[in-house]
Image 1 (cartoon, rainbow over the protein chains, first blue to last red):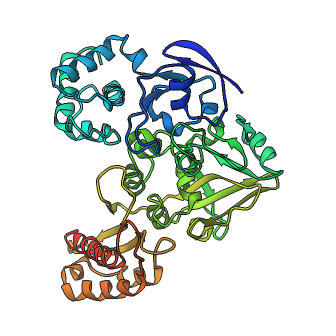
Image 2 (cartoon, helix red, strand yellow):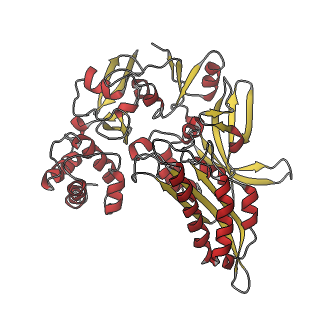
Length: 156
Length: 299
């Protein structure tokens, strides 16, 4: 089945099983591999993407639901000023170690700052509560959110 | 490979649903996991899939008057469409606090951006987090098919774990929450961690305290429901009626609380499973009931 959607502001067409996950579509059909597969059941957030501006788990959404939608992955977000702001904040806070959760974390922090430019610690922790990190530790990722909020003042 | 349909009107969806077996798919956060095969493979669905996430008319939360057939007067109620996501419910100012708090505890933000409350209801899981609050609010469900609509109380709709009154060709289109003046809220979910944890047990409470001229409070309404401690939500109007009408100062008396807790102890009969034990669930439920009652003694 042919499905059209916008990926990082570019119109793409995919011909695949409509029940195939968006995660496999991105990685397999479109060779966009920033989005990771962790648990495959919506618990870890490694496959986080933005779907019509909202954070979703790409492993749990079938391709059919993407028809006409606007998707954003790390590949697109890193081209933007806001995306760079979050990425640099993570680097500054040393919030990246193995890097597997990082694409999802960047998307989750971006989704938070887009609706809440000055989040509290609790709001940051809630925003990344669906993104598991097994090596960096959440403290430094929370610090990164605060840095992105401060340094990106006026941006968000 | 199954056929998929993604209509944008309810009429088209019901038309398709009328003939043959279908899987209704809204947020799909449970369905994709239930039908997964292994990593990297497309989930295997057995029935043709009807996506209902593109149906705009199911995506609204509206307040409307409710014709009460018994008295003929019009009360107001909140109509939550089946396509409304958990995140939208959590953020909506008209949704009662107890329900907002309950859905905010389901999974994590990315999942709540897709999952719907209608899906949580239709799964009829004993651990469904929206159900205790909805039972307390006397919520009703609207079921639609090509033949028309029927409406029933949510507690009649849910029959057993995974089993509801939904018939073939029918879909849950709206949840109706009658307006109620119950300003005091209690909600506590016990899980292994704050996010992404399935419920070991949960307790939800609602109350209204009336302050008399002497400044003494009286419970004019009091409700409590327990989740994940039985096949369906545990709520007893009979036991609630023993608490309703009591002065709040009685709730400061350990003996009265002990009596109420002892009666609830009889009707809370949980089981052991991979998430918790029957003994823990029973004790923790009663401890939370005690907390809910004591909290009201200072009102």
